[in-house]
Image (cartoon, rainbow, N blue to C red; front, side, top):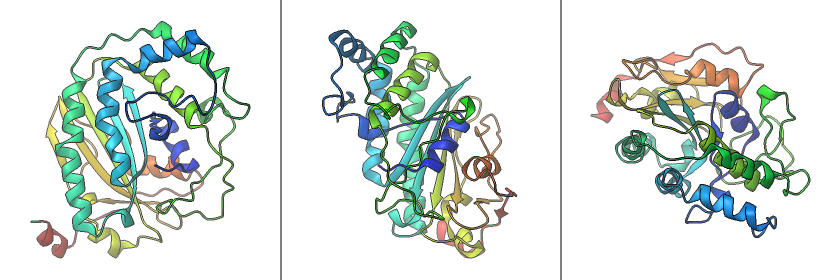
Length: 298
């Protein structure tokens, strides 16, 4: 997967932690050997954390997304919900119909599986947080991870040069990012906030290689689709288009409600716009789906 500082900043602002798949091996264990030599007590503590069934469930369910073209992912735990954010290039699929097929499959498989985990009780020992704090002390200088904007920290300015990296107004120097630090941040989030949840809410932000105008957004089927199972307890996906460069910053389908019934999305497209581009005049940009798209989707 990739990394973009604008996406990372927006996720943190809206209550997500970055899900850095690069920080873990195929079994969900932290890749520490190439970065830092932790003392035995830290190694043992981190082992206890990643051996928890909650982490195993989450990693086994979400890690395949890295091979499906998702550029960045985030996850958060708040009140009665698990919230997931996914950023994916429109060019990572062949066309709008393929995007809709993937969106429906995600809702019916990954999101459904996460929802089946959400009602379970997991024994997480919050005192293990001190293990993570100690582990951070062994990271190389400059590898402390992404500062939380809410805490007034410095921002990491990194953009991936991968094929599906979002466009940027100006080139951003690839100064490096500590996947291990972001992995520790995510595990700390699990320890502090993870508990029994009843809802799973996913926001998917699709971004184009160049400005998505009204015609393009009108044809992009996922942003016009309502994908919801259940009400007070259930799971739901909502899709938007993010224009990394140019205006409007976001597009949404006018017929898709971002509120309820019973499953309000964690943030609406205007809030994502404000988080992704704080200096923009973030007007809501809904548009109706053309009849041709409606016919193609049936």
